[in-house]
Length: 275
Length: 194
Image (cartoon, rainbow over all chains, first blue to last red; front, side, top):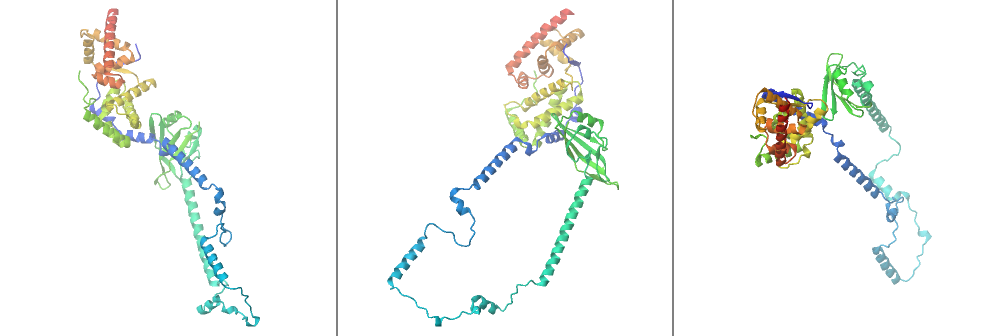
């Protein structure tokens, strides 16, 4: 006889019993939990890999020094125009005309009489003329009023920056204090002993954890365990015993109570089991 | 032999079902019509083979979850979507038996036993014959029991059996015939022993 049981005339499932187990939303939820995020899917690795290789190759090609472009790609250090090996065709034509016109005249020597040389007054320069017409006094000395205004503005600015930094620091500290943790770990890798620590889920602040959910995903689907304290219950511990090292453990929907009795929702936790 | 009206489809219905499948491949929420249509069939198929109701619910959920997770791999081959679900259900069932989450159970109705007796050309008798037949079913191999269950207890057509077991309709007929012959032989053998 094979290891099978034979039932005779067992009552069939009623319509109500059939409907009792029908829950498409549960199937959908489990499916969503099991679905890999896009960054863990093969197509993403492929696309990201090809894009990275493309970028690296493209960058290398762009910044590659070509021998003919060495001089032209260097920045000019002087304001003088760059020398060109080829003569400008227009200039050549002009020079040709000039030589022709010069050759029409006989060679003459210009004589300068030193008595007729006039002294050039410095004030007669166009810049001075412009200054005189505009009647504006330009001073190079710093203005004392401008300086004091600048000082006040810069002091206000630094005060404001300090305030922002302090506020950010306070917010960060508050978030850290309110963050739930197990064995003082806010996430990352965790050992089985640390996980089964008697302290359970704690916070640094005056918040006591009153509820949490443990989400485990195995080969057949996701499982969710709920607990209304900060300690792992027996069912959760049994389930955790079956979790193999390297798998993820999620603590979701963590709720705590602050001093005034007000209920707050805390950040979820995510660990990777080490052993 | 009567046929399963939910399983057997006309060409139009198959194409309509294919549209649902294509929609479910794009959006998992589109799987709901298929789930609603086949949930009861699959649950009954599983419950027919195990003893515990809660385990049947669990395995059924697993079947649909697996189907939803792998819907993108589904290829239409001109047979109802149910045959794909039955194959998943079969593999999930045997996985449960291997993991000892469920115990293999054969559920037999007295009326079905009478059908089997007629098939093996033995007179529909009383308690003794019934006991011999049950003992006989216990001695059959797993694939033979499957065939007996589908053909005589669940009244499936050879076409449907073939699609679920991934064999041809003719092959299903031949296998069924051989099993009937074997049962006849075993029935006489056990009867003579008693």
